[in-house]
Amino acid sequence: MSRILVVDDDPESRELLSEVLEANGYPQVEAVADGRAAREALARDNDCPVIIADLHMPNESGLDLLRSLRRQNAKHEIVLMSSFISTTERKLARDLGAYALLDKPFRLTELLQVVSQLAERNPSGIST
Image 1 (cartoon, rainbow, N blue to C red):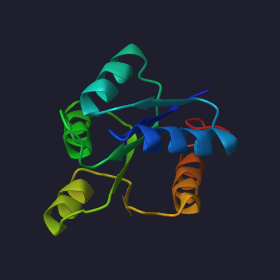
Image 2: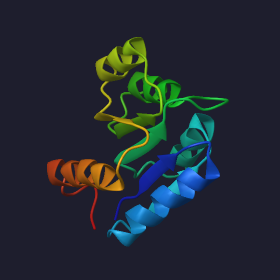
Image 3: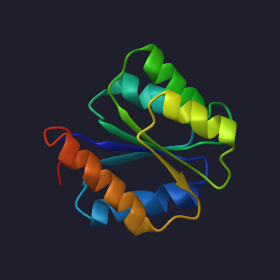
């Protein structure tokens, strides 16, 4: 079974998102603090079809992570989230192939709907 990687510099957000995903049938959730830690986690185990990442983080942002993964031709689906997404960032994220952009605060049901859509698109990738 594949895992979901949550990337957010806010420990409370990481914990909340992990708990909500696990409580809704996604038992393999890993949470890390920034894009650099996400790349390290993916280097250990690349079986992670969905990455949910904050856009603005120290060390390496969600956009930096997305850009890095696209340079590697990685097939991960990326969901970016932020309390502020500029028009330029929004366009760049779409151009780089982000699956969704969620404006914080978002409803947890909105996130679960996006993850469910991704599971339907790739049934062998994410399972509940």
